[in-house]
Image 1: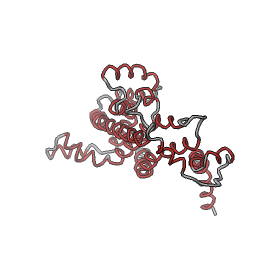
Image 2 (image 1 turned 180 degrees about the horizontal axis):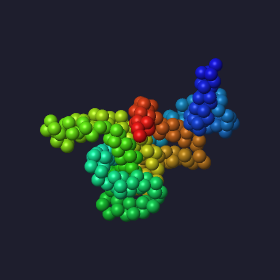
Image 3 (image 1 turned 60 degrees about the vertical axis):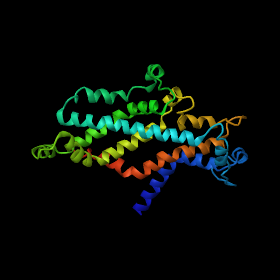
Image 4 (image 1 turned 60 degrees about the horizontal axis):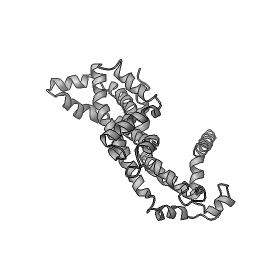
Length: 273
């Protein structure tokens, strides 16, 4: 009985928290006429017409192009952050260099509102020719992801015994060999979780995608807004909902595939003390 009660509570909570997503999905499966006449979550005549319209508008707004841009930007942003954070975390944890100033400084950067960096970054990117480029946005995503990635990796490396490094050095291993052959394999869960979280955060970024792109590197978060009133006559809620659902698929799939790694990494150091 208690188990049934728990599942009922869990189901209610899941429905409550995911109701906006469920409502958007159901709206995307309604015709424009039914959206106006039937605002409830019950669908009378399900249709995929809204999804078809998205691809019929590819001559003006190519959703596949927007999705590809977001995929590249998010993947590169997560990768660059990992590339910088991993050696930095190793140095901070093993040598103590920057533990009292560099780590807090980088972590506190994430607490600042991103809008304060918008104008300086726009001017810098304009000067070096990175406006409306995938590389330019990927570098921004790297900066955004760096604090969280550094925090996760530092926490993981603290739980790896330093005696492993000492034993490897006795056998003649260099620092690079220790990192690649010992530390890296033991940090796979943290690397996976930080990469997934970095990918999702970069995918959801809107501000810099709006300010720093015009056409070539427009991400899906910005491109999706083009479909809201693309046909004129007000917001096309069915088409807009369909675009939103398509834009959710990549981060949703990545999150579902790696959710165990994320959970284990985030809670891995919780019992250490």
